[in-house]
Length: 89
Image (cartoon, rainbow, N blue to C red; front, side):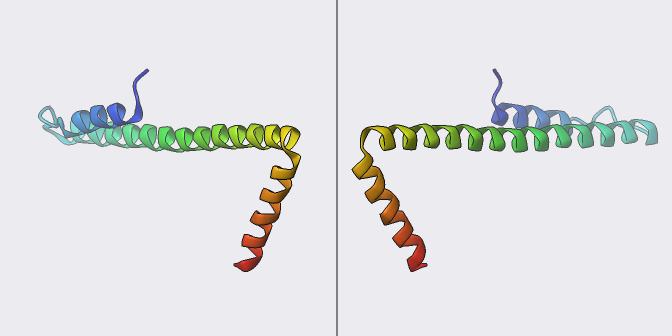
């Protein structure tokens, strides 16, 4: 799979290639290409970020469930500690 950094590099190459732009029609086409590629990159950035957050939240929930089921005293102490830190703010 191609990562986002590689896609951004490809987009930069395509956007910078304007040697073929020689009139108003090709200029409009070039602007459309740039706009479309920028929308693609923005969508990939937003999707990647939300997928990372989803995976991190799922991992954290699984971790908490495990600790709670196996080490209830540690879980309760950690929750109490976190609550105290929140109350201090």
